[in-house]
Image 1 (spheres, rainbow, N blue to C red):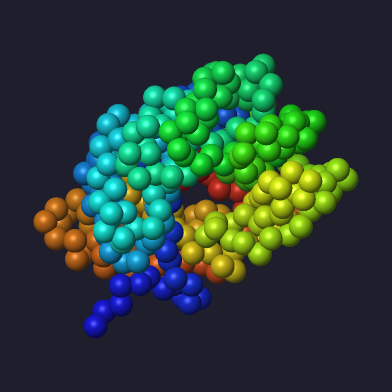
Image 2 (image 1 turned 90 degrees about the vertical axis):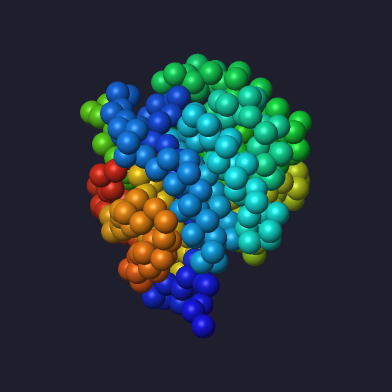
Length: 337
């Protein structure tokens, strides 16, 4: 009998799909997008029905966690139709968790609907609590709207985790401000090293932005007692507990610590390209077998299985020689945050 589980060449089961539903966003964060982004033609994007069929195929092959990303997923027209459709997999028990990563701009509008569709946790990307700095780094975002969205999400019953990109010279001085704010609002906080992806334009330099999390962690340890946690959530973060506040702090360190050995995830772009690794350019086109066989999922499933046989052991991000080695030409917004 054919196994329903996807196993990569290094005997890692693939149980986690990060699915981008759009390359569009209502922000233009300087480490994620160019200011004047050229977005994909809509015909290239998977339709909501195709996103459902693709997700369902992966769930049938053993994916237990589905994270919806973008761009900003909640700006995709009609996206709640897709979330409501995915709830059937939660109800059947085939899917353990349906969640999303968002910039928070649309949470005030959609928080209740997300909870009704079975979402219980959301990750909100937020790098600063300073209104002027927020506007500057997002190039068009409104911090007050995001904060209202976070309040709405918590009021709806959603657990909120804050993801902050560590940016040298930008939010270094907010380390304790963000930490205290998350503690006061019962939110976990994860710090992420800036990744070498996409051309940012002449005014942005990855190496100038790079703030290694080893430094950040050392600064936290000056004020808090840090207890390492064995817990892993299926993602790349490593966690500590701050004993004084009881809160959980995560560190995602693709550059100073390679977390690939336990990788259980793949990423799907909004155009149906499957990236087996965030830090590699190898990809498989799954849109063709999906669209070429509208009534038959067998070619799609075969293409998924074939793609997983090419999943690499790890990525090759490296800043150690003062240049962005292994830099990906695609923007983070294209692959899915």
